[in-house]
Amino acid sequence: MKKDPNVLVMGQDVGYFGGVFRCTEGLYEKHGAHRALDTPITEGGIMAAAIGMGVNGLRPVVEMQFADYIYPAIDQIISELARLRHRSGGEFWSPVTVRAPCGGGIRGGQTHSQSPEGIFTHVCGLKTVMPSNPYDAKGLLISAIEDDDPVIFFEPKRIYNGPFYGHTSTLGNGGSNVATSWSAHPAGEVPEGHYKIELGKAATVREGGDVTVLAYGTMVHVAEAAIKSSGIDAELIDLRTLLPLDIEAVTASVQKTGRCVIIHEATRTSGFGSELAAEVQEECFFHLKAPIERVTGWDTPYPHAFEWEYFPSHERIIEALERTLAVD
Image 1 (cartoon, rainbow, N blue to C red):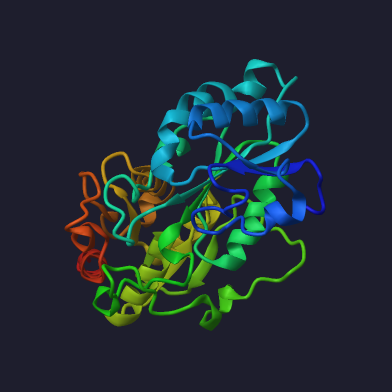
Image 2: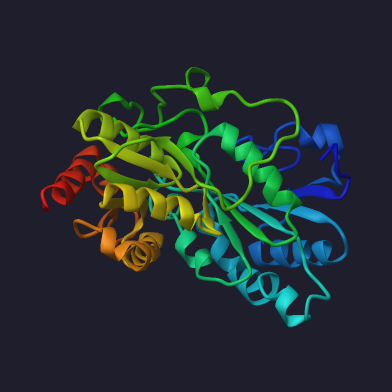
C-alpha cells in the first residue's frame, strides 16, 4: 500500500478493528479510513463497489470475513468481475483481489469452515490461490494485487498462527490451540521488503521416488507429517496456485514416481481433486502404475461435532499411500 497509492483494502471490520483475524491490523492507522475501508454487511455490494473501483484505476483488496460468506457475492464475481475483460473486448478490466479465510480445524461448524475453491477454479477469467505458509502468502498476495486479472486468494485460517500437522490429540479448548508457532518453521520468516512469488508455480516440499502427493493450504503440513510417520518415500508438491495450475511440475513428478495421491479438505464430489485427477490421467496415463487416489473431506456440510472425522487424517492419508503402493 505504501508502494502503490491505488491499492486499498475493504470489507467488514477490516479498518478500525483490523479484521476478525487481525490480518489488516494497523492499516487504518497507517493509511487512513479511505484506504482501509469498513463496509456494511453486504457481500454483493462490496464486490460491486470493488469492481467499479478497479475499472477506474484502483486495486481493491476485498476481504470476505469468512470464505463461507462469499456466496452472496458470487453473481458479481462470476457474471461481472471474471468476464469483464472478455465482454469488453479487452477495453476494460478490474484488478480486484478477494481474500477469503477458509477451511476448518477451528470448531467453526458448517458456516465458518468451508473450502469453496473448486467453485472458482471452474470460472474462466479468475485466478485462484491458496498458500500454505507466511512466506508464500506474502509473495503470492503481492503478485495477486499487482496482477491485472482478478484473483481469489484463499487463506486457510487453521494455519494463521502456525502450521498444523493434524495431530488432533495435542489440541485443547475445543481444537483452537496451535501446537507449533511459525517462529519455529523455516517458512515463517517473512522479509520486510517487497518480493513476489509467481502465480502458477508449485513448490516441491519434499522429494521422493515412490509416489507423488499433491496438496495445498493446511493439507500440505498434514500430508508432510503423515508421510514422515509412514516411512514412505513420497514426493510432496505444494500447488500454491490452483489456477493457473503448474501442470509441468505435477506431470514431471508423477511421471517420475508413477503414482499419485491427491489431498484436499473440501468435499470430494466435484472438488478440485477431481480436476487434478483428470489432468494427471490425461498427461501421465502411460506412466501410471496404480489408480490415482483422493483423500478429501466428505460430501456433507462441515460437522461441528465430528470435525476431526471430516478432516483428512493421517490414517486416511497413509491408507491411500499404502493402497497405491500395493498395486504392482
